Length: 284
Length: 284
Image (tube, rainbow over all chains, first blue to last red; front, side, top):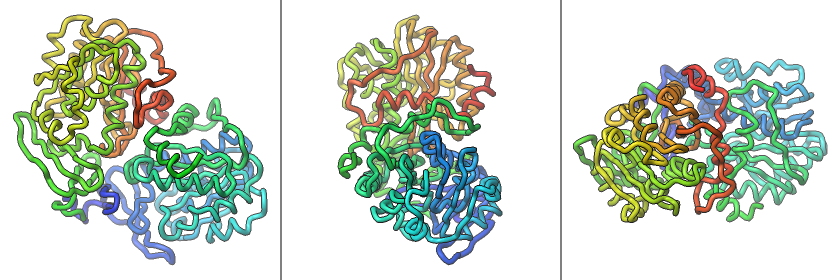
């Protein structure tokens, strides 16, 4: 049995799964206007941020998620100028986006300013692009922001949100995807975190079907390891505004820890057991 | 806090990590001549086997491990006739091996007969090849067995063992790899489970270096998800008896849940952070 004083545990009765990290101490605990946010110093994963009891990220392994949420889309598109990040309050996706010199604007719309302020305190390495002149940090409702965004004014939308319960629920449906579709330029891309390939096959299938019904002609799944999320295996879904195959780059101009073009190509292969879930949802 | 009556938890103070599965009931608990073996019925992962407190496998997700420990090697080699499985007492690797019609003999050398007997009771679907006329189940010391095996008499050796502590320790060193090298035919392959890419970079590097120093001219790492193992991300190491590139097959003649040739190709790409660990160990 793991003692509460020594370990942080995220457990789901529904999934029948638990995950624990050994903690040195709790560094912060608050209830913001939107959610409860805790920060721990762990023994082996650096700092840990927890929102409403769910692991958001650790210093040790967030590179997997942040690299796979950004570089495949940016390098496949090849000419991304204007980016919106919905959620992403820890600023790690913003940092990776700003490493691409062609990007002219990156707007992060995080509903809870406290997430970003705590990231600045406890994950400063992720916030290194917050002062980039191309970056704009807004603290607002991403759904409303997208509704008001001009037509065809973005090349890439990254939905880097919590799970589809609570504040993020409205980011996982056709109405939101229609607004994204409208706000994207031709050739534009939408990337959204899409939960665990093992645990959430139905949700992934439903997401793909909803994106397609909102007008996106092609959706692709990218799978990658993410040890601190349930099952240790995670995914991003990439929706294309225009028809046509999406190139995997021949090389990567950035120093990365996980991403390579070959890993990018590999991540696009959907295992047969998961393809069944996509087929069952009526997704192409 | 997760109550001991409701959850099985594997925790490592050294790794600072814990993993829990919700259990319906404990089905079996014994101390064999070699180790403690427990079987649980979990809420969402089917049956669970635990040895000395470490998760060995569940019914829900073992397909990831067993497919990746077998099909990449068998399909890359293309003409495997004689296979030895060291460990592998749950018989899942044996089952996957026997799905390849070219295989003429598959010998499983598991030190602890109780593991196999319990697999027959609680994981019967993994034991469906135990009566295959090509299969031989031995209950013996795999290290000694390999030492006595005739020169150049095997095409594939699969080391499907527990972690490199306890009974399996002697399966992770140069002396054992030299015996494997000797027992393999030209073009033969050695595959060994090689722990977590995130957690065990040094061990992986040391394994590759030891295999190379034992004579294997090429070693390759294959990474794949394995939700019930620490970090949810696991690897197999593939060592070639002969020089030369190893082909990834163009198609797979078997129905699989995870394995495809494209996933096989993707799994061979080592992420940059891990390549550093290989380089530091002096592995090519």
